Length: 217
Image 1 (tube, one colour):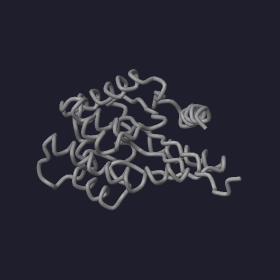
Image 2 (cartoon, rainbow, N blue to C red):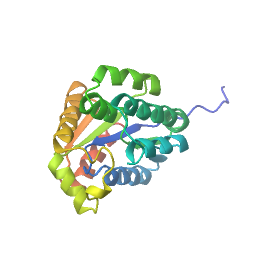
Image 3 (cartoon, rainbow, N blue to C red):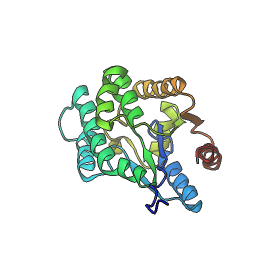
């Protein structure tokens, strides 16, 4: 008889993606609450961020006042922050059986830097594969929103032009390219993605999310 305790089943890695103003933070919090009511251990985190060094890099790459940041440097800062996040937070939590819900992950780099900054999907995917050691989410939920609607939501929430970070401040055509990039990524791996209309009610979105996650548990 083997008296050694068995390792816990790995946790689910769940990522929310979408344009700025899509409502990701709200759905992240609701998904956490839903999983916890089922008795699961859950952590929520964000990108860039999640560790001390990653939060410092977030400040450098998103806040104004740090001088010009060229596209390659921007992509590398995001991937460096992601490497620390995966190594120090995400991988250990999943191995311990904890579900991880993350606000943005590699797809944001593929969309914003690969397409938005025209660095190319393949180039950005390569540096992020190295940064994450090939880690992929079990489920990626895209909250689809137009650039105009996302901007209107940010303004309504008190995030006017003066409050916009470096990426939020980009023009609408940039954000429309990001939107189309997310939809294209989802079309390539439909089994791993759930695309939802971000203009649906908070309740309807939450119901669709939890129905999807229930099928993975």
